Picture 1 (cartoon, rainbow, N blue to C red):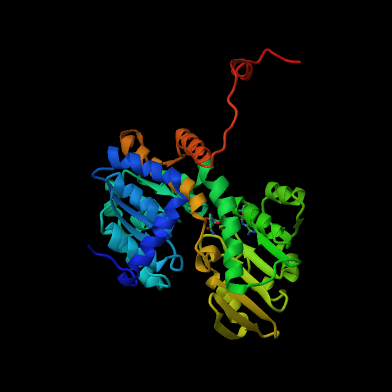
Picture 2: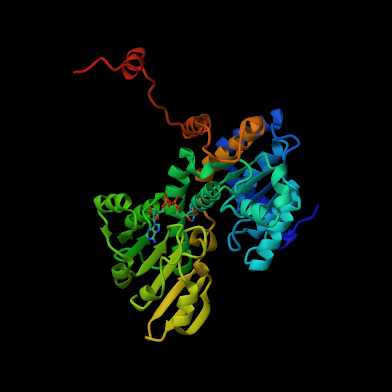
Length: 419
Ligand SMILES: NC(=O)c1ccc[n+]([C@@H]2O[C@H](COP(=O)([O-])OP(=O)(O)OC[C@H]3O[C@@H](n4cnc5c(N)ncnc54)[C@H](O)[C@@H]3O)[C@@H](O)[C@H]2O)c1
C-alpha cells in the first residue's frame, strides 16, 4: 500500500486518538454500523482531500466500512496530525499522503498521489481536488460520479466554476447543509480559534480589543467566544446586512483602516484575500497579534508584512513569528497565517465534526445511489440528510422536543383561520 506519512512509529498514539474522538461521534458511528452491513459504497474508488485529524479518520473508517476504496491527502500543509495519519495507515489500512509542515511542492505531490487512485467520487475541503481535475488531470473527469465539498471557500470556488461553465461533474455543497455550517462553522470554529490562539500565545483575552474580520458563520462564532472570554470585539464587514447584524449584536463595526489602530489581536475569517495588508500593518499597535481562521493563507498579505519588516524572528514560540517593522513596532504573526485552529490546536471538537461528517457520509451514499439523476452543477445536500442528522444528534444528546398535535398540523397547513 503506497502512502507518505511522517513516521509509522506514531501509529499506536494515532489509533488511540482516533478511538477517543470516536466516543464523541455517535451519529457517525451509527452510520458506520449500518454501512458495515449494507455496503452502499461497494466498488466506489474515493479520493478525499481533508484536514487529516482524528475526526477525519473516523469519517474515513465509515466510508471504508461502506465498501469505498479510499485514499486521503491533506487539505492544508499545517493541519495534519502525523500520529493520526500513521494510525490510519497501520491500524485501518487506509492510504494517507500527508505530513504536517509539508512544503507547497509536497502538498501538490500528495494531491497528485491521491488522484493517481483514479477516483469516481472525491471529497474536498477547499476544492483543491476538483480544481486539479479540471485543470491538470482532465482525463479523470469522465469517471467522476460526484464530489462533496466541506467548506465555504470550496463552495465559492465551485460556484465560480459552475458560473464559468467549466464544471464537468456534479458537486455537493455539504458546507451549506444546516447541520454543517450552523454548528461546525459557528461553534466549532468559534471555540477552536480561541483555543489555537491561547495555546500559542497564552495571552489574556479579558479587556483586550479583538478585531474580527468577517461576520459570517465563523465570524459570529469567534466573536461570541471572544466576548465570553472578556474581550471587546470590533467587527469589520463589507456586507451591509452582516454589518447591521454585528452592530445590533452589540459590537463596534468600522472599516479595517480604523480598526487596525485599535486591535490587540486580529482574526480574519472572510474567505477573501488581502483583508489585512500594508496600510493596516503600518497603523497597528506595538505587540499586536495577527491571525487567520479563513481557509487559505491569503487573508493576511504576508509578503507585504515581510517587506515592511526590518527583522523577522521566526518561531519565538511555536506558531509565533515576530515581525519588527521599520517604525520600530513588533507585530506577531500566528500559525504562518494559516487556519489558526488547526495550525496551533487540533481543530474542531469531535462532537461538532460528528454532524459535519455524518452529512458527508450520507451525501456520499446519496450520490452513489442517485448517480443516474445528477448533472454537472452545484447541488444542495438533500433535506432528508439534515433532518436525519439533527434528529439522531438530539437523540444522542438525550434532548427531547415536542411533536405537533393533530390540531396544530391542521392549523399550520391552513390559511383561513385568523384572530
Ligand atoms: N478555521 C476553520 O476551521 C474553518 C471552518 C469553517 C470555515 N472556514 C473558512 O472560514 C471562511 C469564512 O467562512 P464562513 O462560513 O464564515 O463564510 P461566510 O460567507 O458565512 O462569511 C464570510 C463573511 O466575510 C465577509 N467578508 C468578505 N470579504 C470581507 C472583507 N474584505 N472584509 C470584511 N469582511 C469580509 C462576508 O461579507 C461574509 O459576511 C471561509 O474561508 C471558510 O472556508 C474555516
